[in-house]
Length: 158
Image 1 (spheres, one colour):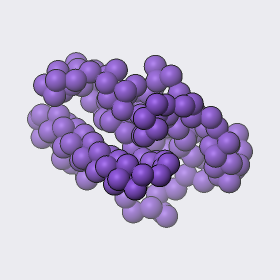
Image 2 (cartoon, rainbow, N blue to C red; image 1 turned 60 degrees about the vertical axis):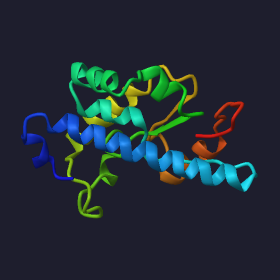
Image 3 (cartoon, rainbow, N blue to C red; image 1 turned 180 degrees about the vertical axis):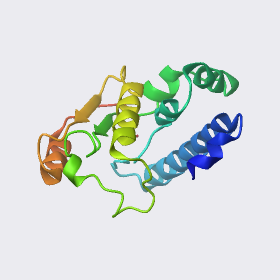
């Protein structure tokens, strides 16, 4: 979605409602499918419900949650077993951050760094937040991710 959409007054709220609807629908649908299999499973999501808060003013985010009849504890802590935040290459691995290999990416490195930090901050408070910086190459980052302990959860999902 082009950032031009956000020049229309109130569009940030409409977009974030729609993104959250889509995110939750996909997560819930995949969870139903995995549970129906009757075997242990792990669902990994590229984004989560709290990410939208990084793209809005705090007061608008709080109103969005109120309008939806929910709160941050519900959509952050109760919805996900663990949160794995992989810091953008724009923050610590700048030579690997480029717009040339990803047509969907529109943020320059400075903007990407700012948004990455806002997104990471949105998840602070989750009891199993794991942050993976760029102190190693990407393969090392993925290895650290695979060895991290997400912590047990009774229902085993998300």
